[in-house]
Image 1 (cartoon, rainbow, N blue to C red):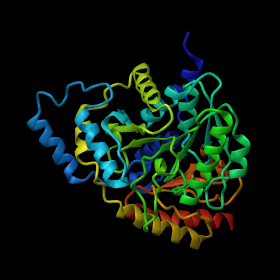
Image 2: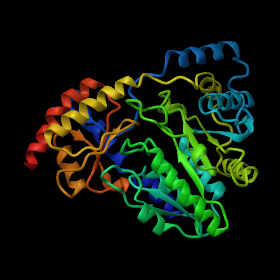
Image 3: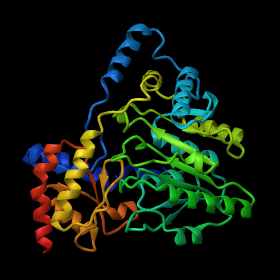
Image 4: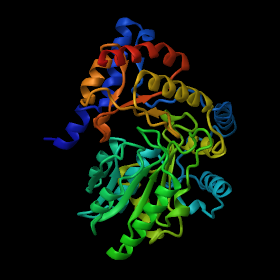
Length: 393
């Protein structure tokens, strides 16, 4: 006898992973150069040279210590460096004691949801959204409340949001730059959100925490501003990962920032740490605690992503696709050329063009295109996108 819920999660891969696995199978059959796989958000540019150089130096200089356990919340010197970096960038006053290092952003979110959730609590999520959010929230014993997308600009549908708030609302999750749309929430959007949350927290007699999932924070284009959430809404908790900014998805390293001025900050931090203990997430990878903290002001070469974005946006619009231009991340979320996005994705699949249906992101009628690939791959894929568009004409 096993948990039916866990068995279901373990046997039913996400549609993203299903397409990725299909792409590997097709590549073996027809050649990788003939499969145009835009399914997975795996960074295509290498980590900065300094990342590898730092790892090698630490392995040579600290070979007897670098693989050892650290404190459960992360090594103090690494947390201090992360805090210093945030303070330089945002004019803040964070300390090492407000950071909890984690096994990537997924662990950060799980620690926050499990740390905050009490029986009957709800967390609001805005579509389009990363599908695993539902798994994380329900795994913490809470309920996810989904707000439909505002498809003209992928900002927030505030009427739907306000109608969904209730005394059961424990937190609101945002992801900006967004996966899958690439859209960045404007300052006006965040200020309006903060005003509503402040008013409702006062009305309900308890804080509503804003949980900001920020793995794409540094991947932005054309001078787009990504407002720093804690400066706009006091009760903001930040979840971060170096998977995208430093091209280190396989190293699984990130953090939770619990600012000292949020409501019940000491209790929240302790609950996050307790959740990490309960989930078995204590002590993030020790080598990469040090590597990322020494390289945390760097990014990979994101100019490649901007080139890819510009090429795709311009080309797809010329073909007749409706595209909201991404301000960051490395995803495009165009409307499908028929109402059934699953059928559209299957039609694309027949051309060995792998794009993810938007239904899985809470936004049917769209597909996600991950353009963290080689620019030449996009150029060679454009005739396939044109063939797909022509089919619907």
